[in-house]
Image (tube, rainbow, N blue to C red):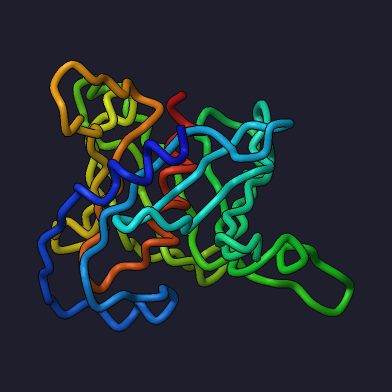
Length: 219
């Protein structure tokens, strides 16, 4: 299956688009060109669930191997297994599912008597009882402390249908989740194989982190 996806990923094309991004994207590892990634909702490790992500050349880019059940922590790794981002569910009672995103591995999330690593982003599931038809899925804020969170991005669409967009504060699309279209008719991928399109100036790793969190919130 992995070799089959590698061959299909080479047929995914992207449009390069150069746009200036806000200074606050210093927190992100920006790319100068657009990128199309094929996301497979399955780990390459037999003993656990997870995600496997390959680029348009068929190269393994990201992996998630510690994704079991309803975890309190997720770790996004590169192809070699190095931890890039760690996401921890916020320990707070209530209906809203929210997560903190940290740079690096889980050691960066731990606190001691003298040090405390702050999260970079806070991602919160959108809940609006009065507007049941709202297509907003989640809100992403830069995290500068408990009393200082500034809007960064909004996720809109339908994750269940693998059709959603990440919008910046000017409502420009910086990343998009799409259904995987088969090169030949009659081949269906369902919802376990889809495409993540990342626009120039956005961090593909953070875009994939948002996919992981959407999967936790809406699957």
